[in-house]
Image (cartoon, rainbow, N blue to C red; front, side, top):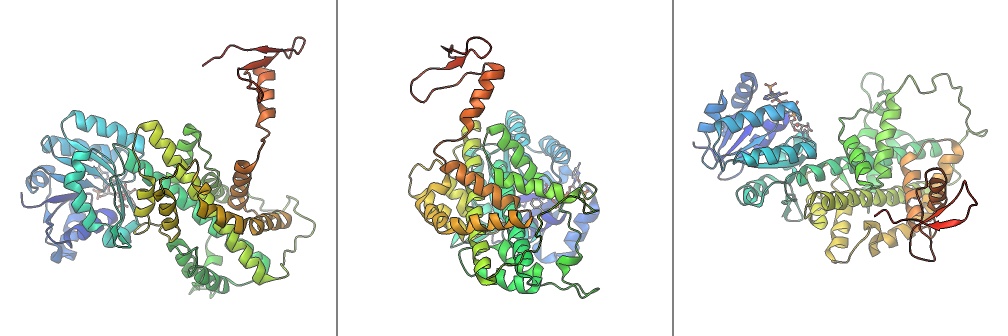
Length: 480
Ligand code: NBP
């Protein structure tokens, strides 16, 4: 075969990734799609790419140099399994099969095992950045065995986005590590978007500014510590006027948020790992709440605060408070996300460099932001960080923001404006700060109804109170 790399699945992501590969020096790209039409269209639209098309899996395999390397970009789930089976049928041991779809990491762990047992190399790779990222430079999160990285690394480095001179790709860890990290990336993306939406809502309802005026505020924020792709596009969306009605576009869009499920995966996984990703969870739930139009109070019967008028006295000062609340809540969301990656790595035996992960998110992907440099700095010191937000830079930032953050959450609660991500992030922060938590009472309750025992602050051992007896305390057998 003449091609050094192949792509299977030529919908929007696959065809853009194939074009990106073909545009790099030294690459010849073999392409294949289940139905012929997509292949024909791609070849016709992009003769400059020099693609080598195939119309069967056999032909595709024959078009590739050995050891063959193919990137699958098809719908996650069964379609991905179907393509892997076909490739194993026509490939030879030693060839590399890469899944660049949005696969669930546990599927990737299962597939890697099965494919490896058949003698092939399998790499589950997170790809972020949507269509444009795939074409111009995505953030790439490959997992899989070290051997594959030797072949794949240089190719992936050549197509990835570049941030501050460094390609946005790293070998994240073995088997499902790449897809795990991609999943958490998407969870953080949900939280970031929800926080921005809450900031917009509070400013709009508190100051009466128009979406176009708020667009200017976000554009201004984008020149400071909040600089990020999501803040930038928020300004673009808010500035857009609907051609049909002359209204701000945001006012004619139905307020029911969709989701493709990766945010929910992040939360489900966090629940299994026992990691409190409350900001991400609130963001996922906020989308669910919005989408249940039939449950929302269409008749206005649910009572709200007596004084529902919410107009802040000093709009400039309030906007700055909202900015600080957004920044502080964002620190919490990222800190929680990295905590989930740390816990996932411990659970699944991956050696994940958290600083390297923050660096590959600086370009190409949806959550790209200046802020990720601060996370990279925090991990670069080599200090043991129990949670990211305890790094000195973030402690300083939270200290600077916390009064404003509390004020904004109070204002939202007082005015009856939902701010679930702002307020849950603040509660998480205060939970970490609290010297004593009411969890002591919960342990007492658990001991009462289920003899679940408790520890004491003043001596070692495990104890149980004889609640239904004389209520004396006995030392319980350590169940460990
Ligand atoms: P889709 O997710 O819409 O998948 C369409 C592709 O899957 C077509 O090429 C289709 O072939 C192929 N396919 C299906 Br469906 N069943 C198949 C089967 N049994 N055998 C072989 N091929 C099959 O495409 P996409 O939006 O380009 O996304 C591709 C992957 O990238 C997905 O996993 C997605 O989650 C992930 N991703 C997407 C984005 C994004 O922004 N869209 C970002 C990051 C990652 P056909 O033409 O013959 O029907």
